[in-house]
Length: 102
Image 1: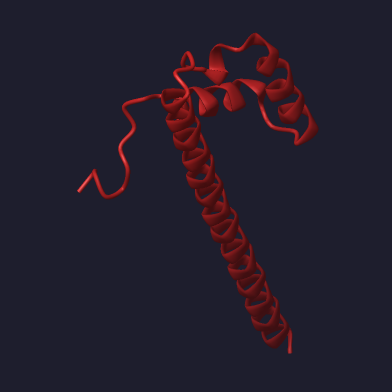
Image 2: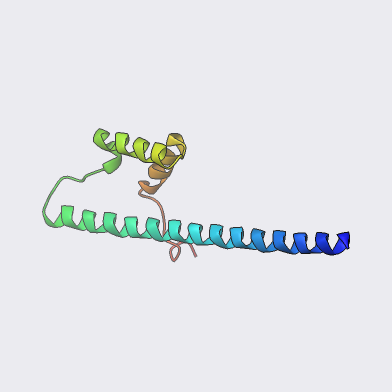
């Protein structure tokens, strides 16, 4: 009888683990979707700057934005250093798209 209980616990554990994997994959997909959305906004911003002959705006050199980034990190219990690294990567101009990388 104890082996049946162990099997049931094991199956429950596998189902729970699969649920976590699915949730993690969904969160990762959402993260990539938001990065793509941000990239599109930044592209529109570049076009607007050129069209209107405005100086290029670099949000990562804007000292006013560093405080909100750190606040976001604290709010969501994420390392501020990690947040700054991520935004540093997102601001790199030499990033290629998936299509360009093949």
